[in-house]
Length: 372
Ligand code: NAD
Ligand code: IPM
Ligand code: MN
Image (cartoon, rainbow, N blue to C red):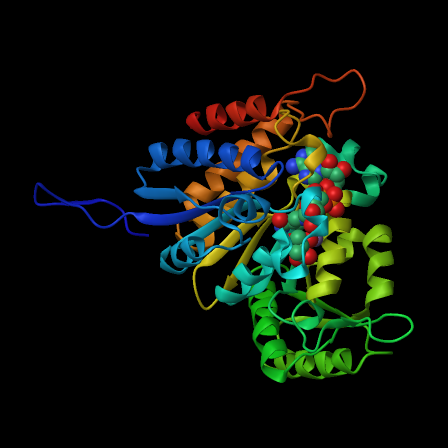
């Protein structure tokens, strides 16, 4: 990362690392504020030179600029070194035409950034074993990474339409994958597995879908380039079950866009809360970092949101885009220390346990960061 360097008594001021911040809707602004406070703390401690600027996205942008991804935001994300997003989505947008929905802004954002590989790590944290709906001996040791294809599949396939011209309406979406799209995301998964426990489970529905049969073929082809990585193919229905029965079985889970979306919420539940799950979306341009959870409108502005998914997403940003692994590890360490000390956001607290607000959890993390 570009830091301020000092040479021969002169301050060489290199340009700061620029993050475009898109708080979005619902709890998006709550958890984004938390992540930015933690970023401030870590920048202080590691003397990082970082500039952040906020831009509208989602329903907030529809209200402000009549579009879920206005031109100003588009320009900013394309010029930034990394992009941080809170969440999008608002019940008030339900009546909007599909292209103006907050979610359409997010999908367009992912598209223009060409973020094709969505990394969603899920790990059982010892202090939270009791928060998982699974018995602790089952969830103990769970540590996997979902590599979700993010730029294609049903989310983007054409044609897509609702035809209301007949007696009853017909709706069509298209599931389409090219060899290149599968190949590039598969490489990311195998590379990641090499740095982990060396196992990839590729999840598909090859017993029914052509796209999945091509998926299997291409993933096997990529797998042949990684003889040191063990590859297993698994049908998605079976994978949904195995995640509950044997979450510890998985190391890297490689899958297409829609399956990855669904399985990641399941992963959130396994860890104890979706409010813990962070993500990094990587491609050929700036990386995009966002918690896996949505805008949770019921919790917005009440101090009830768990900020840890957003804070851990900021850690992923520092690791992958800013190449500040030490700062990223410090955040992860602080989060673990805070959880180990018994701090619990409302959705994690068990009856009788002390509950901490979004701000209190954040303050605990920033304080833990200062302890070296
Ligand atoms: P959601 O993730 O917003 O909420 C699911 C459940 O988890 C709710 O009970 C919510 O209260 C809880 N929850 C979520 N985040 C939490 C947190 N940080 N702390 C504590 N509890 C948390 O999913 P949903 O209800 O299906 O969707 C709500 C809106 O969010 C929809 O408009 C949807 O499109 C949108 N959404 C956006 C994103 C995103 O921006 N990346 C992701 C998922 C859903
Ligand atoms: C996610 C979300 C999004 C997705 C929605 C809001 C478009 O659910 O990031 O998991 O489906 O990708
Ligand atoms: Mn989702």
